Amino acid sequence: MSYTNLLYHIVFRTKSSRPAINVEHERDLYSYLFACIKNAGGVTHRIGGMPDHVHVLANIPPTISVADFMRNIKTATSVFLRSHPSEFPLFDGWGKSYCALTYGKDDRETIRRYIMNQKEHHKRVSFAEELRCLLIEQGVEFDEKYFLSD
Image (cartoon, rainbow, N blue to C red):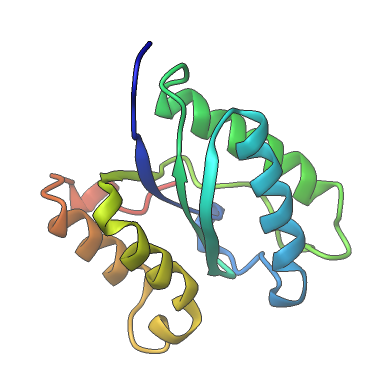
């Protein structure tokens, strides 16, 4: 038997950072995303975000790569959002990239609260600043030229 604890803080944005996730209907998207993660064998601890991006805190099973997991999640949620054009009229797809950072169980509650407080957080910090800080905090090298490219 193998034992894993693959806890990821995942962040992905809408194409061109369009504010396509309406606050009035974000729960519909988050519920659907929760079901997608569960169907993939994952465990969701928190989903939240802003009109232009989504944060997910979840354990991902070791049987699927992060790249495959994200491709499946983005594809499924794109279909969902496009099938509800009256609720998400500005949705034109997800950006090409994503951020997936690993954490331990001791960080779970802190990140869960961080995701829960996104609305308040973004009164002071832009998405670009937030993502830059997350990457620097975790020691992830990145090229500013491709930082938020579609």
